Structure formats: C-alpha cells, structure tokens
Length: 115
Length: 112
Image (cartoon, rainbow over all chains, first blue to last red; front, side, top):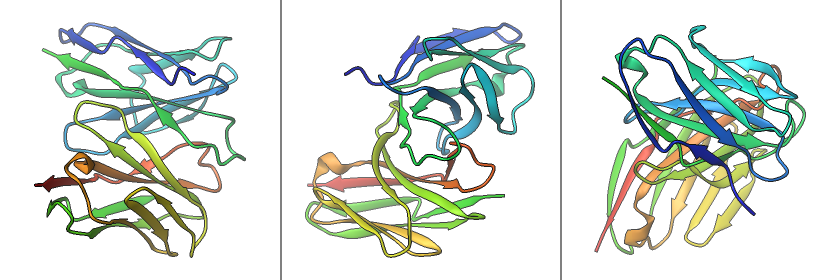
C-alpha cells in the first residue's frame, strides 16, 4: 500500500518564478492538506482540498493556490516566489473532513529553495 | 486562535535514561491531539491520536497521555534510534475541518 507521495523531492527556483508541487494521497484517502514548514518550526497549514474544492485556508496570501483532481491527487502552486517561501512543503492525506477523526499521514515533503 | 506549546525545545538523554516531553494546548473544543515523529529532512510520521482526557496509548518505548490542558510523551529506556524531533498537533471540533495546528517540536538526541 503506497503511502503519500510527493514530487519533486527538491527544487531550486529564482525569485519571481512560479512553482508547482504535486501530491498523491494514501490509498483510500480523499482529502489532501498542504503545509509549509520553515527550518526549526512546526508545519503551518496552507489549505485543504476535498471533493475538488478548497474547503479551508490558513493565513497564506493568494499567491498560494491549489487544485485537486478527480483521482484525489493534488497540486500546490506558488506564484511570484519570494526568498521567504523557501521551506519544506508537506502534503497530508486523510479520509473525509469535518466530522471524522481520520489521522493525517504525511508525505516526505518537497524542499523548495528560492534564490 | 489555537495554540500549541512544546517543551523542552531540545533534550539530550543517555541511552536508557527515561524522560517525558510536554505539549500544552489551548483550543476551542479538542477533536484530537496528535503526536508525530520527524527525522531531519523527512515528513512527519504518525505516532498517536488521543481524543479525551485520561486516554493513554503506547507503542514500543513510547507512551502518550492526555489531560484537559496538556499531553505528555513518555519515553522509556530510549535508544539512539529514538533520536528525532517530536511534534504535537491539535485539531478542533468546530470550523477546523482537518486542519492541524502544530507546536514547534522537541528535538530529542539519545546518546550511547
């Protein structure tokens, strides 16, 4: 049973560029959440997708956007990259939203470096 | 605003020296408290979920407990392979969806 998979594992981008990160959820899961983790900090919630819609959003600017596909996989897009966007981006999958107690399982992350 | 505070920030133990990590939380209606282990450069690995005060869960050398204000992760006779950052997170009842609010973690180093 494949767990949560993310691609790419590492990425280097220049300020002002755009980036797309990808995530495939754990088999049987239908909800994907994205987190940003700066060095030495805990993960910070970006947003959550369920049934191909953004259901909840954290305190991140509109430069951060996403998408969920019919097969439950998801993309995170970041436009106009800033140096401060350098971080480990984590995808977490779970089953359902709101009324469940589903554990969230994380992928290995994408390390984004903005230069 | 949900808040999670973990202490200590870093902990160095000798192999076999038991200790506890603390996670204090403030949340409007707790729907679950989660413990994760994270190795450097990797994603968090799920350990436990606790749902109500008084609940306890164990896994090998780890035991997690929960009160109405805090959770403890007890590590009994740790080994060097237990070295990692341990993260605590909470999920709220209303308006929280599946969002997890994390603490900054406790970095554990177990030495021979």
